Image (cartoon, rainbow, N blue to C red; front, top):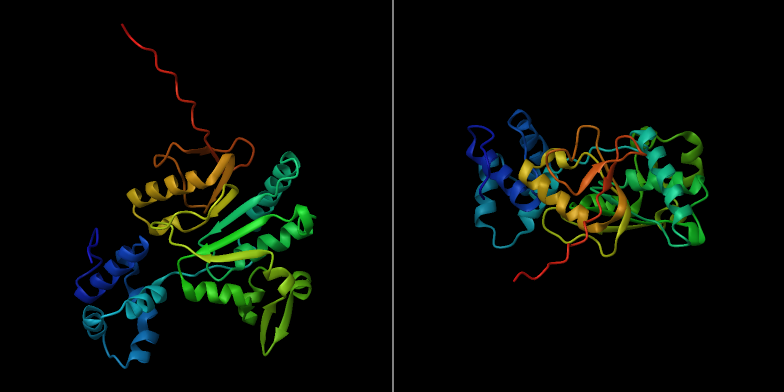
Length: 286
């Protein structure tokens, strides 16, 4: 399980961090090594293990990848909330409406990559519905993906705690789109069916089929090394329509990592896909 750089003196921590990087491309910074033990405490309890060393010993002896899958899934950072960076989502909706007007009847396609527990794509579906783009031929095709099977299971179920539902979700939207069930809030079927949730590894899998008008990949690249980020940009560029938009997190940029995207002139903070230049015809010599 090779890793680009050790995160500390603990051999067990380094091997676990290497497993995460190998499976997902994500790295754990040295100053966040504490997350490993914190995130894996439930796995240790479930397996009846006392230390990370014992866990690594089982990982090395495991004949199937089930334990490795469980460890990796536990380590993934699923921090998210409804209407996170609401101004960004409003601008995405503006762009989607403008693209819809120019599309000549074609459905707008949106990819929410690294969707975690589903709050981002659900927020977007609510917002687009409010903009009159929620039904019939005007309904965008929204694909939401994540590498974590447990996060996707939660997203498909659309079930959130009172704490999660209050983070960014206005009461009006909560009452319109969610039902109170056993102390939690569950998204209504008419909202969930506006989305397609799929498991996808950004660093290893081909992108979802077809071309997208808008791709959201917010606060995902932060966990990748620079070479991996460049690779991911190549994958995203292959999935976006010429002139389509890429939306990154506030601390992320394409600058210095790819020439396939450039800052958008129309939507501040977004990136436009650069159309490939037509290949120049070759002339015979002699």
